[in-house]
Image (tube, rainbow, N blue to C red):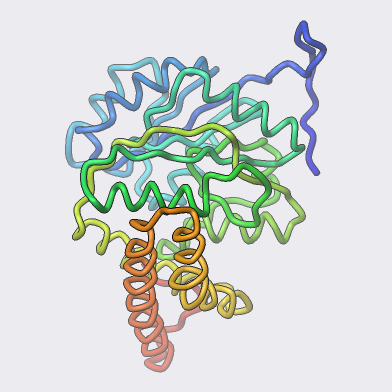
Length: 300
């Protein structure tokens, strides 16, 4: 269990919240970045770092309208997250994405859960504006398996608050762009003995996907699942159980028992698309190995 050294206490006798740095990674986010930064500015963070993934739109110029540090990235999401983290100066780091719309009290709520549980990192849940069947289904799916505060062995990397000591033990891996950044980081953090979980806080997300968008997203996840299994072969059985049993069977059963029937096709769609993409990517990686290209790491 990790406990940061805290210099003072609040009037209630509880440890005072240390300064927090916010890191936001963005690439071609001109449509959503301004609103994201308006919300982030209201959080009361000690510093805000925006890492641009070599955007070809107005992302950088929009970021420079705000009193933030703007850095050039381009190493993929994981690498750019680490670039931003390395540039921060404070004991706590919060990762926010351009489609997140945090309420002003988010950092305080995340810190409260982090401190109360003695965790190394804590993720907020996300809620999506319900614009069609699939966004309603996604919210029901999250309510079934994600929006239950408590300890986990796997969380997402954003919106998440971290103690800086986390990154003294594990770092985002920029060398393998097709490995899921959250699964890879959480596995190594868990194996290093760090504890983490889900917070009580929820973050609205500006996200208006269609069925095609979900299929493309799940296909990307499947390719990242394959990269994760290739990098961590001892975790491949657990990943297969996740996609063959937990997603298509256990979670739909839990959703039906809770009256969330829309989550069932969402879970099936996710499992099917991810399995299809995972299988295809593993075949690609196997062919590359046989051809002698070498696969010590997963190629971008």
